[in-house]
Image 1 (tube, helix red, strand yellow):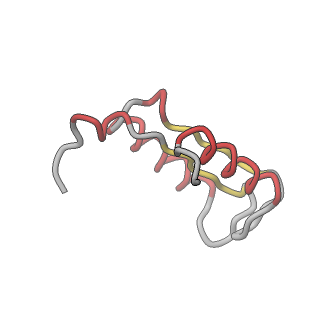
Image 2 (cartoon, rainbow, N blue to C red; image 1 turned 90 degrees about the vertical axis):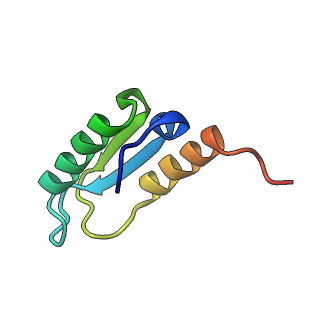
Image 3 (cartoon, rainbow, N blue to C red; image 1 turned 90 degrees about the horizontal axis):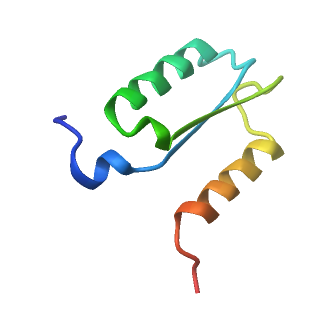
Length: 77
């Protein structure tokens, strides 16, 4: 869709993936995160995997999402 430039190159990304996902294999998540790192500042890309998690979510993942939101978004009044 065009080059990523300016402030968009500094966007923070959290990508989460279960290591037992039968619908989207972990390998595809790994390939996606490497592509993202080639497009934006790789220091701003975080890839988390969760042991035993299938195509779903878990409390550990939700806590990681919460911490990511708390870190990168302003508080809501």
